[in-house]
Image (cartoon, rainbow, N blue to C red; front, side, top):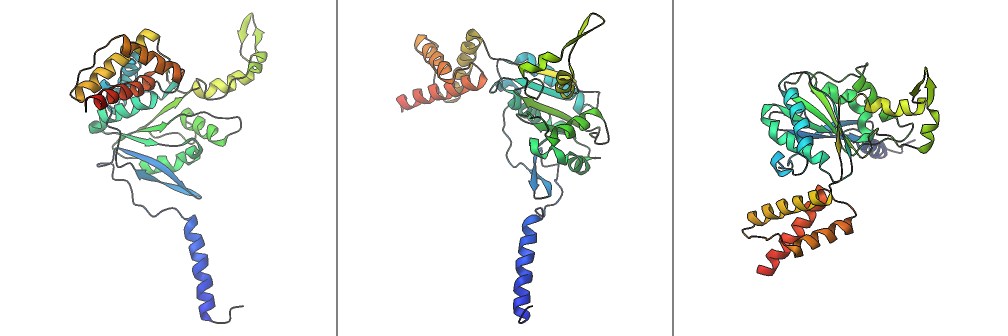
Length: 295
């Protein structure tokens, strides 16, 4: 088949090169004493935990307009890192309202008390058993963060998460909690036809099987924390506080006046929403413009 040894060696090299592309990257165990966050990276048929070198330095005090949500999450996280009973959390609501940023702020607050975060994409939830094996027995407290999570019917990762939350054969270790953010309260799409399954039982209205199935995953989270759009007055107050803070950090002063108010309103109309992200983006624009004018 091969005319000489060199042909055989060349073929073997090509085979080994192809196999190497399928193998996971050779990495050591994460040193959690110096790493506070990691991502699960999938590679072909396996994966590994990749340390995050730079973590967003956001602090709880930086997050404005969501005081109730901060209090609930802060209390639950303090219970968790203290070794007390605590809950898995579903943070749901409109995008841009600070859900994932709040989790990062909690990490910065409690990292020195052993809190760690592992971010896992939806498609990688099937690897939860591997992640659990990698961190089981560690002295740290791990939040599995699934950001912007939603499922479509029939996705396998949905059942894996459901099993992990339900305490079945894929149950999470005691040092793990799930913090999931989503735009959907039930993590699954809701259709008008879902309501057709409601029925009367002993003069009580009961949901149909479709609705029960869609709510069954969300029910496994002990805490539901909603995030809603701000009213116009709340949005203006947030813009006022953020522009004031950014201006102070830049060494200038910004007066809250009709010009600033009208500009902030137009910005929110262009974005079609009033939320923390919109207020922050406008404030950066406005303060940056003032600095340009003065330079």
